[in-house]
Image (cartoon, rainbow, N blue to C red; front, side):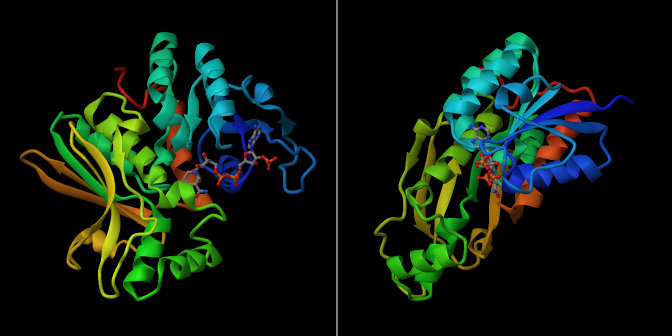
Length: 303
Ligand SMILES: NC(=O)c1ccc[n+]([C@@H]2O[C@H](COP(=O)([O-])OP(=O)(O)OC[C@H]3O[C@@H](n4cnc5c(N)ncnc54)[C@H](OP(=O)(O)O)[C@@H]3O)[C@@H](O)[C@H]2O)c1
């Protein structure tokens, strides 16, 4: 079987792990080009063209693991317009421009995939796609942001917000600028993507009623989590007290949890590490497996 050529934009935490999977994994794939900003930096793969994003767009499949919105939007439009499959882990892109990209993919009979954009390596989008087939998903409820889980857990153990945030930053659970996570936007983007898949209509991040955790009082002994919740009608992300016996209370560290309630079928639960290079690259690799099998999926049904 001829190997499909992958143009990979981004060689960071996830991109480099995907490069290793493409090199060693079972699928008939070859890395044709890697695009980065700094082409001189150490650690780039040998024997592969190191080029611009435009060069990566020449491959059979374009994988974007760079982050940001502006560049990825241009690359996605260009790739899909040429009928090429576009695979990304970029929640910000999908939660702000996913509808436009899905329509373009449909027009050009191209694939648009983004399993790694929610839940890292945990098959949340995949599970929602599976359960959405009957059209009977009633509700989604989950914890999809590890930074806030860490901070709220530490506050429940008696630390102040500032102490908990500093600790999260020291432990690698929070960015130097944590605003995207603590204001709830990361969770809102992920929820918008999950709801779009669940009900077959693209929903932007702005449809989510979002409350973050900045300045939230949490008393020692209280279990509070940033809960993402959606029905077909309403999407919200807000901090809520939860019972210690609630399965969501068990999410700790980088673990994410999603509950999917389905009419006449009960509640399905999927949990696992929501971040990390190798696990997230695994979800991208699983998307590539669908392309190798000849499928042309589009992440959201077209509105
Ligand atoms: N890390 C995770 O656990 C995780 C989990 C789920 C989803 N994601 C998503 O996966 C994506 C990648 O995340 P990451 O953690 O791997 O990021 P990262 O470590 O910061 O790597 C980003 C890479 O993209 C390259 N890049 C950025 N802008 C570029 C541009 N304009 N042209 C060419 N290359 C460019 C960077 O190149 P230089 O090195 O030259 O700057 C770098 O190699 C993001 O969308 C993120 O939200 C990550």
